[in-house]
Image 1 (cartoon, rainbow, N blue to C red):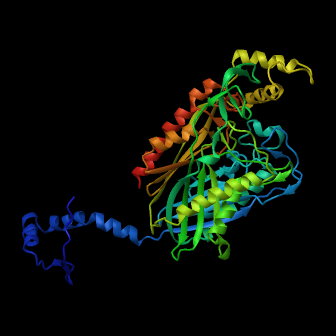
Image 2 (tube, helix red, strand yellow):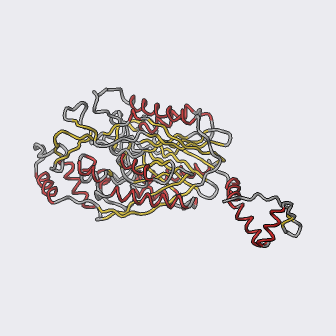
Image 3 (cartoon, rainbow, N blue to C red):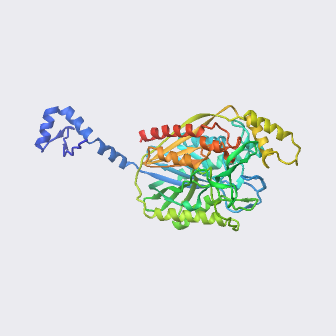
Length: 512
């Protein structure tokens, strides 16, 4: 479209004139004064819209809300659940709020292995009631540290279905502290600039699922072609069962004066661990934030800088290279090494970022109905055999078969279908998707490939926690992440989720 830059004066009566350019006078005479005025508005529309955007003030605010649980409660995330006896580092709900003058978006990352949807829903209701913010503009997710107590219900209840039931004491505390953190971040809003970038860190991510030379038995009484964590330098290893995603994506916001406010990172790496039994810890997610705060000298300001790491699509990714010999390290050493290294890589890219004074913000969300998996007749028969065996007897199939016999029975509490919440944010040319599962890396790579945005990343365990999300081909390979009750939804779920997210991305992009 050709833009006309017309110099004019407004008379005291509100009429445009005089026109000093003969061509302009001819145009006015040809199309008439009314259409001429509309033509000017149309021709200047793009510039006018740009000027309007420039008048808006982009703002950002961040906060830390302490969610460290009391000692004595069982720590979940491992096969045993020792009581919490020591706080190695405080656990937080970290909030980042962005505001473009029209739309306000909220990110909250919670130091927990997985937070039930009903807890996030309660927190969102509190924020909505106390601030008026729309729920679709709030993205809340767990970091996936394995060193805290349950936010999914007490004891074995956390694996059952209890949506709509009253929250337990820690869940109520968590919802309240999340909402408080969001409100504090809103109070911290200030004029800001935003940028985003990425850097690869391939040396820390490994696919933990391996194709084996011969099928291996599982607790369901069937055989798997793939095995999770098969052991270092196992002679039966063939190749990793899937890819990794080495990209560390991040958003950075700073004040107009250049003071860092927050960085929200995203890395497709599971927790690292190396934590003594009974210790509460936020794992490498906290190390990343703390180290970035040091590098940016963010501890010398108020409000303080908030470094956040979200969990990308890492359902099949960990920090163990099974092709090499194991290396034993003291507690916390490995997570310190990884968290600090990733922070330093991000910091180097941060130094060259071009911050923008304003970008449009948009959001979209939907409910997707998925079928809940049920045990096949073969697995049902195998589970009955296991349940009938006396305690202490040699396993029929696998050392965890009794555990899975109980979990599969508990899965019967679940309805035949569940509704999950999917969500997308648009931040300028950056797209962010949110999925309430532990998502395989190849799904995240597919989302990046199909996304209409220039840059895209996915936050997993967002707005709920429903177990693992493998792809249909990975279901065929089997392995821990595909076992019934570890995975609870239909085998085609990942395909349906990606298709729905693309619809939401297109909706967000259309509205920008």
